[in-house]
Image (cartoon, rainbow, N blue to C red; front, side, top):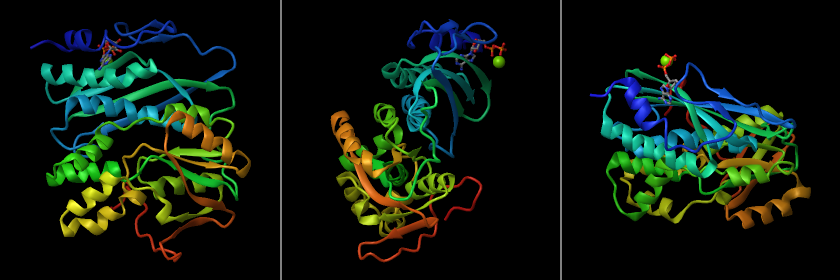
Length: 329
Ligand code: ADP
Ligand code: MG
């Protein structure tokens, strides 16, 4: 059985994008990085995935490697930032070589398109937990914050939220078929919306990525901006695969699952607000980048989140989404 150092050497030292701004990478006591050039600022995010909390036991190792970085890439996308370097803290129940090879492959697949270098990390023994810290840069003063939304701005969302939560539920219920597989992939391999995130600098007034559920995360954005919003539920896009899975679920799951587009979580889509004068340009950009973007509501001065159903009635929303420190139900 190879030791800790050998494993790191074998699976993490090579095969990741190399960058000129990495002065010292894996192999010393700490990494040394060249600071971003004048006119750019550093952006830092970290996310932890715990087995049994963020992904089911026996989750595919390649998917886990991919997802661990993708959720961080999504945070940088939501700031309008460009990723550059990551560190990896791995806690493993045992040194399983086959698992590590597969995990490293998934991680490389997420890192390669964005030229993210792996510059260091830590390896410990314990319950399976993956923490990635991602660093990147943004033109000075241009990071897109949660706090810039103003009354009259349109509320937009990318993709079809709810697919990921549906995929996870199908996985748990053993539901198979192409629709379930589509949704499972949306959970396992979220697509960080980096190109759109960058393109929205100077256009979006506020942005957040959806990790806990559309309404829950939008609510954070509204709080930070000191505004409210009305969301038209029928406008929230649902994928065909989502509808097919919903129909395939046992009756007892259906009511809860029908709310996944609003409250499901794990989508890593972007939710952002756009002032009226930039609306047309944002539409053009989304089309050019091939990213589906839907306007689902409007920012208002009156604080709070109002959610309208098909008949224009105000829905009573019990839970906005997932909160680790609250009873969810
Ligand atoms: P130290 O004890 O000084 O913190 P370690 O023995 O933990 O050093 O790590 C040795 C080198 O291997 C360091 O460069 C560290 O960043 C890197 N490293 C350790 N674990 C990982 C990992 N899981 N992924 C990437 N690099 C790692
Ligand atoms: Mg260490």
